[in-house]
Image (cartoon, rainbow, N blue to C red; front, side):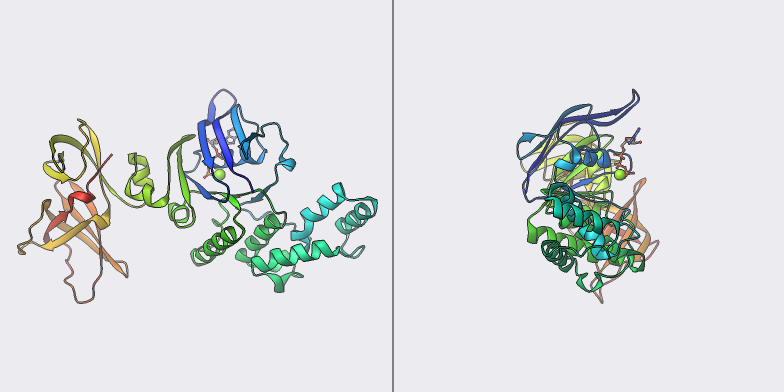
Length: 375
Ligand SMILES: Nc1ncnc2c1ncn2[C@@H]1O[C@H](COP(=O)(O)OP(=O)(O)OP(=O)(O)O)[C@@H](O)[C@H]1O
Ligand SMILES: [Mg+2]
């Protein structure tokens, strides 16, 4: 197992493309670390530099505090899982998973083992796999719950099963670092959720340092110990999922991680317990203070409440609004409400029997000062 550090990593393609612009990461041993960001932000490039498939323009990569820039990819002991499963179609499940071990035997074994490895690579009928390979492959297949399909051809598997084979193939090598690049994006939503749990459980059982690339914020937030949000080749914020959600340091992060209402605001007055902020044409009380002329105000949809216009509700922040649309989402109801010139999203837990506000209805929107975040 290895901790991974990335220091001032720069990767340029020609003179025009700076794919990575001074990226710094400090991934702890045994940590599940997600790289999250929109298409083209440099996630795969970061991953490929860590794996050794890409040479950095400048900067350092360290495994266990040792610089490994010059170490070739096959010596880095990284397991890789890709979006396209990249399985060998002419091999069955067992052979796909045992492939890396067979190659390793071929390079590292004594003459007899070299010969039998080579024979096995040419055709399964020429030689049986040795006991140590059978044991390791069986164990890896058990982990991904595919023990019963060892003899299946890979073209006779579902997408989820193929992805499990790809995962077993990486795990069987007992890699120091597991690198996964959008491994779930080809699966349907339900399968994706199941695989999230499977991968997270295996990662925790084995305590394997894992870097997981995704552009799906829900995936990153639900699986990772920590998340680095990337944009245009730079790390914008690196934090635990809860920190990212509740304390984004940048409007881009606030918008990318979870849904949000973001306003441009202006500091009006500091107060002992926070501040007054002018947003649009109304004043909001925030529990936070940031004495800046121009700032961003973030209010999460679940941070607001909706009340009937005729109710005598008392609140520090109480604004008039008009419901544009209401949508049942099962456990919650979403209201899109016109407030001044803006439309905002509000999400409320749906309590059966509780009053539902209809489209066109005038309402009060309230928000607790604690929920008025300043960025
Ligand atoms: N071989 C290459 N030559 C030139 N430009 C490249 C090369 N590989 C990547 N890039 C550019 O570097 C930037 C980062 O690409 P990268 O593949 O790391 O993005 P990504 O975050 O993985 O995106 P996606 O979510 O679409 O996979 C992009 O602008 C891309 O066009
Ligand atoms: Mg990519």
